[in-house]
Length: 189
Image (cartoon, rainbow, N blue to C red):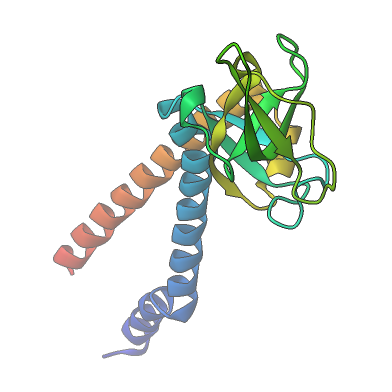
């Protein structure tokens, strides 16, 4: 091998060395995290008919501190049990909601039932909750992602999702085209 061939060969090897592998691993990890976040924060709740909320106060500490991202799925009122965490309207028909744990179920003389709820960090029960106030039961939660959820509006989430889909698709196509190009160059050598 002459000197120029050796330099070219060494340059190719450097491209496939440790830095190249680190770059690949980091880019795949970022891709995985973005796809995972889109799935758990947007896609899964929409497919499951659930709603997403952010815990804003410390009333549910330590299990659900402020900033916790919670996903609440509608369930029939008669399936809610003591120990379940539910999100409900403070006043029927109004948008303000709270997420607290069911500590009991009160049966009325007329056969209706109401939930007795309390925040995990609170010492006093909330006002009884009627079935029409309940938005759903906790499906799953994720720490800290509530801060992201709170800063993004619904329209911003939609744009972010589409931007990520287009960006990730473009990234995949570029990587695929690069792999094909590298393979052709290797076959020509």
